[in-house]
Amino acid sequence: MIMLLGLIVCPLVALLLYFSWMHTAPLHKKGTDAMIILGYKCDDDRIHPLLLDRLAASLELLEMYDYKKIILTGGPVTSAQSEAVIMKDYLVQHGVNQDKIVLEQHARDTVQNISNCQTIMQRFNLKTSTVISNSFHIRRTQWIAKFLGFPSYYYANRSIRAVFKQGYCTLYELKAYYATIKVIKNRSVIK
Image 1 (cartoon, helix red, strand yellow):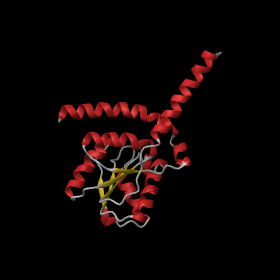
Image 2: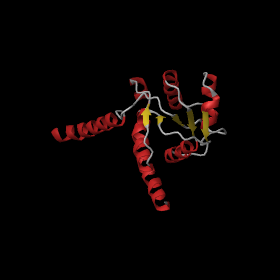
Image 3: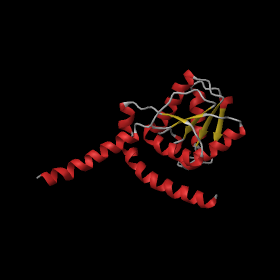
Image 4: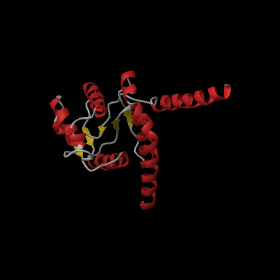
């Protein structure tokens, strides 16, 4: 009986610790040179609820801080239009000055997102950035940025409701970490 209980409790405790770790990455509401909003798949050009959370978090910060540039990143992964264009349309409809928006439409994963944003920031002589994503995605994004030498601040909507909506994605991040390790190893060989 004790052994059976241990077989049930131990995985549950491990899962709880994993979820806690994933959703407690440091977040900062910061005014920086650039705001970077990472894309998320937009099936049939519709904004996914997780991308809508990212856009809502960005609008929250845009009410508080004046960013020189807003970099929207994401290619046309599951839609005809790029994620960046879909986000731009949404933000402009919500009163964001389109002259501040810069589109990065070629990235197909988070490693490319961060790498391409580094190039854009250099082009516009932007020194600091705040990266917007979902709570489940912040840890891996920080890890990628550290590998690429791209220091940034990070922000996400971390309400209880948002975290519960991200349950499946939090589990899926284990697979995403594995895929990211492979991409980074390939980049290390290329460098």
